[in-house]
Length: 536
Image 1 (tube, rainbow, N blue to C red):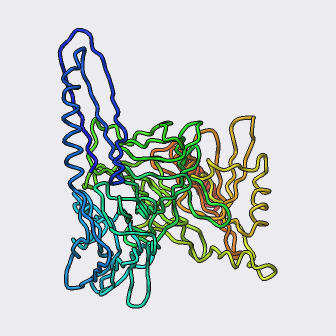
Image 2: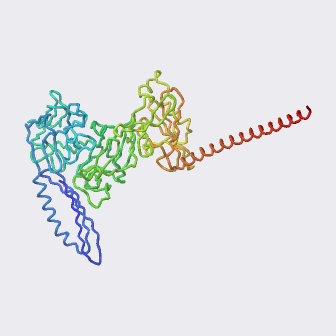
């Protein structure tokens, strides 16, 4: 278990000294676990009391953690019993459990299960089933099993999940001397040899989460789920690179970068979540930098980082959903799905009808936008001579988050930008940025996948236009979305008002002119009639 102590010792003295002591990693080689201590001392001139308490704190920590390890020997087997809900945990630790968790499926469907590690008090708020928990690791995230599936920890040391005769997942540790399985208090599932020598551990195979003391190694990925209820690998992933933790969106060809957490100029070998802070380490375990995830004065034990299904990164401090903190960009790249639009903090979808291209509001947040029928597939675009002809829909003011991490083609005209996308069969949309500065007049960006777009430039200093490639059928234009209260809205209202006033003035003048002509004609006719009467 991770113990985080925040001890405040206030001794009224004249001269104040602020000291922050970080005791980072105390490693037990005997049981191959890592314990992270963050001891924050605020004390004044006399700090002797803090130093007296520190040995006592360490003694309690070591004693309590060393007595909470449960081992499972080889030659053990478990079977899912559909009559039991929820399934009993195979192994329990104070803050984590390992076993079978139910997927979030409609009650009318037969239940299916993941082999998971989860926090028992952390319920899945996206599922109506009261027994569904939020998993922090799944062995079979892309292949849920059903009733009577088995987990066998064989005498050869291999841990195997099977559905009948089909092997769904395996630790691939056969013949490597594994003698037992342990779920440590950190949430790490470990298969080890004698003397606790690790052969396999779940920390080396993250899914969509990073828990306290879990080491994210260089090149390792955290991959999102498809949706809140479908835990299969999704469209977004975080990858640790030598100088940054980078967020990517899957796309044909080159993945799209949508987030970068800079970790400094030194080469990073690993990243560790310790309390409420991400620490970067070198190959020699020397600390290189850190990123604080919370401004709270203290951090709850059991915190974790999770990559959401929409690409958003959230940091959870407790089992209550409202305590999560969004980390990174203010806009989520997948919040409204593919071909979605952020419209006044709500989602809308690009939608077509026989005459126009419009925005269709999303009424159900759990069902984001999808690719419209008018947008062709990669096969249709890149099928040589049989490729479908295409045209563009122009949408002024629209912008896209990954563009700020791309190198655009400088100083192309808007027409040439469209031509470059039309000649590239992988291109689904082109964005044209017109800059206000003289250093770079314009830039053209081509994208091979389109997730959620913004209705206004995401940064200052340029105007943005999106050219959306669709099957060639008609000429369509998507006008810029006018937000209530914005300068463009006020300008548009002034144009409408001036037009109305002008039209009203013209009609009034014409009416007065007609009335004047009729009056003159009547007077003339009256004079003619009077002359005729005198003559007779």
